[in-house]
Image (cartoon, rainbow, N blue to C red):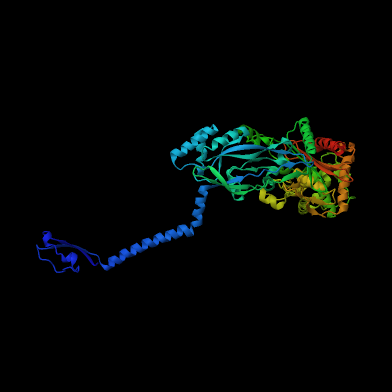
Amino acid sequence: MGSFITRSYKNAKEIDTDFFYGNGSIDNNTPKTGEVGFLGKYLSDKKLNIVLLLIFLGLFSLLARSVHLQIIKGAYYSSLAESNRSREKAIIASRGLIYDSQNKPLIKNNPIFDALILPKDLSLMAAKRQAQINFIAQTLNIKPEDITAILNKYPRNFKYSIPIKENIDYQEALILKIKASSTTGLYIEAHNQRQYLFSSEFSHLIGYEGKLNEQEFNDKKNEDYLFSDYIGKTGLELSYENELRGIYGKDVVEVDATGSEKSVIYHKDAANGKNLVLTIDERVQKKARDIMSQYLKVFNKKRGSLVALNPQTGEILAMVSLPDYDPNLFANGISTEDYKKLSEDVNQPMFDRAIRGEYPSGSTIKPVIAAAALQEGIITDKTTVLSTGGIWVDKIWFFPDWSASGHGLTNVYKAIAWSVNTFFYMVGGGYEDFAGLGIDNLEKYFKIFGLGEITGIDLNGEAKGLVPDPVWKKQAKNEDWYIGDTYHVSIGQGDLLTTPLQIANYTTAFVNGGKLYKPHLVKEILSNDGNKEDIKPTILRENFIDQHNLDIVKKAMRQTVTDGSAAKLNSLNVAAAGKTGTAQWNTEKQPQAWFTGFAPYDNPEIVITVLVEEGGEGSSVCVPITYDFLNWYFNTYKKL
């Protein structure tokens, strides 16, 4: 096998038969010229070994590839093959409902349908793919190029269904379901559309549900959200998304080569979302909103807020922010025109003033400062200050009282009842030989009463407000802190900012023994299996002011009604107490008008805080609103 030789002969007779029939030996002698010619090629052992090695390497490569495909990547390719013969379909859970405190439904779920395309079910062949798109477009009565434009945003193997036509009614969905069976890639999916039964009344509290945007989907896709899913966008719909959404079920369906469903391989039931029961009675919320709306019209104002709390638990009894909006606009898919109208409205109807609006508190902060001064021993209930219309600093800067002639000798009761600035300038910042709290102590007690931090209410987007101090001012304004800054803060002016909810919440501490609760809107969470989770009151802070000092401030707030700036409330048939406020914030605009108070005085059931933006005097604007609400609450609602 060492060589391969070809012999050449003149004719057949010269053929050496020994070559075929003999011992097979070959004469290696060189033939004579002209007798016999040889043509040959010799393959050496070295070359032969190389050939064998190449053959071996080829066989080994085939074997290795086979091991890689069948063993190492076997599970992967098996799953690919499985996915080609099966489809996973989500079973959408019904979203939980929301009820008021009397179990009146505030939301209804209406069935609605969407038409979706699964890109990976469409052909990779251009002509066939276009034919599928044309058929789907004809079925849905939309333009093929519109479908193509949507599909071009995603890869061809995108594994999530893409909404093509939304909010299809039941009758049309039935027809489309039949037509969809004639092609691959088109699906008709049912889901629940929210209907907010009391629309604007609860718009800032319940919020609304809407379609996931791409950023939300990317954030949520690891939590089993679908590309076509809906999600809470604002309000309780957002903050209780996990409870309301429920747990989706699943069907794994065997399909044939055309994508038609043949049988269910695996099934998992969906678990519907939990229901929420609120702390608010819809009748109370409606009345609060109606009264606020009426008075805003009377005073020709556009913006305001009302917060009512149970001081013994922190439960929200009513929370109004005006103007408001209809959340059904979003649930139905808001039009460009409607969204533009809402977003460009200068009065910001989608802005929740109760928890997000930050305003100077005006004189509603004075009970806090009085409590701090009493607790620190700066004053007692017998301490008096002479009010002559204001105080001078270095004969240059004048800090006025609201009454130019002053209020005469003033103790803490009179100072709160008549909102005497001079008293609080001195108590807060000191004057001459009278040592006041100073900015450090003011900051300490503001924060103890919950200012400068969120209350923790079960809504997203709550603002912290602002408690200013020398460090903040240097960083924010590159300015030093002056005694005038302390005086301004001591009467709720300057850079001090609060929300209506914060003021309502610290007011509760004066009537419940010095407890600061976390306000909450949800009272119970109900599971579909009948289990109930009660939301327990959460105390944020307590025992930070002695009861004796709280009683002094409470008594002073009662005097505000019996002999002070809120005298209109004295005609209620229940004893009320409170504090008015008028907060300057812009030299060219009206002050922010405030009132915060409670009733009944001896055993308070309700705390109420009212804000009217640019309303002017709190005593003339917010007190009448408070009167009408408390009058209805105790004379009508409590007797129902």
